[in-house]
Image (cartoon, rainbow over all chains, first blue to last red; front, top):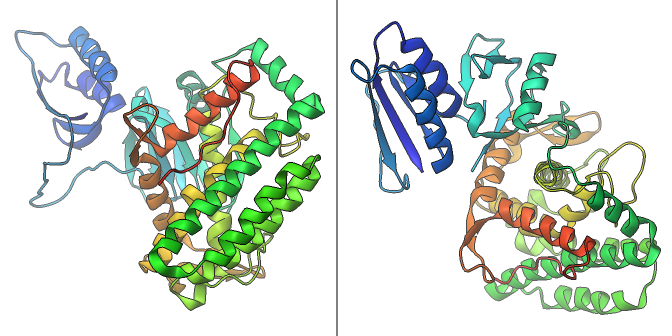
Amino acid sequence: MYLIMVYDINKERVAKVLKIARKYLTWIQNSVLEGEITEAKFLKLKYELRKVIKEDEDSIVFYIFTTKLYTSREIMGKEKGKEEIII
Amino acid sequence: MKRAIYIFSDGELKRKQNTLYFESSSGDKKYIPIENTGEIHLFGEVSINKKLLIFLSQEGILLHFYNYYGFYEGSYYPREHYNSGALILKQSEFYLDNDKRFRLAKKFVKGAILNMIKVLEYYNLRGEDLGREIKNIEEIYESLENFSSIEEIMALEGNVKDIYYRSFNKIIKKENFYYTGRERRPPRDKLNALISYGNSLLYSYVLSEIYKTHLDPRIGFLHATNFRRFSLNLDVSEIFKPIIVDRLIFKLVNKGMIQERHFMDEMGGIFLNENGKKIFVEEMDNKLRATIKHRKLGRHVSYRTLIRMELYKIEKHLISDEEYEPFVMWW
C-alpha cells in the first residue's frame, strides 16, 4: 500500500520521529514523508513511533492508499524531496 | 515489495541514523528507506565502509557491482540467513551425480528454448512471418531427447540461439539495430550491447532471489561450478532471458526509447552510455514489478516473484518432492 505520513511533534522529539520515519518512507518536505509500505512494516513503524511520542502533545496523521492508481500529485514551487530509485 | 535502488552517481553510501544515506560528489544528500530496500545496484564510483556492509548484512540486502561499461563484476552476498545443510548436500548430490545433473540441465535448456519459441510465436501472430524460424527451432528442440551430455545440449542451445537472434531482424523495426552475429567480449554492435547489458542485469536479479531461498548460488547444473563465480543464477536466467530481456529490447528499440545517441564507442566495442543505461534499468525495474495473473495460483504475481517461484520448484526437485518443470510463458 501507499502511505503519506504527516506529523506535528514537539521540537524535543521531532528529530527522533523523523529518524524512525526515514527508515520506512521517503522524506518529501518538513513533516511529510511518503512511500510504498507493506502492512507488516506499517505496524512496525507505528510501534516504533508510539514508543517516542507523547500522546497528549504530539500528533501524526497517516493517509493510506491501497493503490496509487487513482491519485495524482501536483507541486507548487520547489520540489524538496521525492522518491527515487535511480540516483 | 522491497525495492531495488540503482546508483549511477559518484559519491559515498553509508549508514546514518539507522538507515541508508547517499551523498553524491556534487553535494546531493539523500536518505534511502532501509526497510523498503531489497538490493542495491552500484554503477557509479561509490565509496563504502565496513559499517555499511555490516548493516546491509543484518538487513539481508545484496550489493551488486558493475564496471564502467555496465557489466556485472560481483556482489556483496551477506551471510546466508536461510541456511540449510540438508539442501546444500542435496544440491551437491545432484551436481555430482551425472544423470541427475544432466536431467536438470536439460530442463533449463528446454525452458529456454520453449520461451524463445513463445516470443517468436507472439510476433508471428502479428504478421512478422517467422514460421520457418519457429519450425527450425522446434525441430532442434525435438532432437534434444537424443543427446546425453551437457556439452552436447549446450552446443544445441547455441544453434537455437543463433536462429533465434537472426529472427530478431524481422521483429526489430530499426535497421541500425539489426543482428549480425553474437559478440560478447566486447559487444560489437548496438543489439549485442543491449543483450549483454540486459543479461548482466538479469543475472544479478536472479542472484538476489536465490538469496531469499535455501539454495546455494555457487552450485549450478547447466553451467559448471568453478572456483570463482556464481552459476545457479546463470542456469535460471536462461529461462527468463527471452521473457524478460529480449521482449524489453524489442520495446525499447521499436518505440524509439533507446536510440543511436544512447551508445558509446570505446575499447573496440559498443556500450550503452549512462543515459542509455538509466533508461534500460528503469524499464527493466518496471518489468520486474509488473504482474501477470498466474494460472495455477489464480492471483497476480510479479515477474520477480515468478523467478523466486522457479527457485522454489528447484528446491522441491532437489528434495525429491516434485519433478521440476521449467516455467514456460502461456501467453
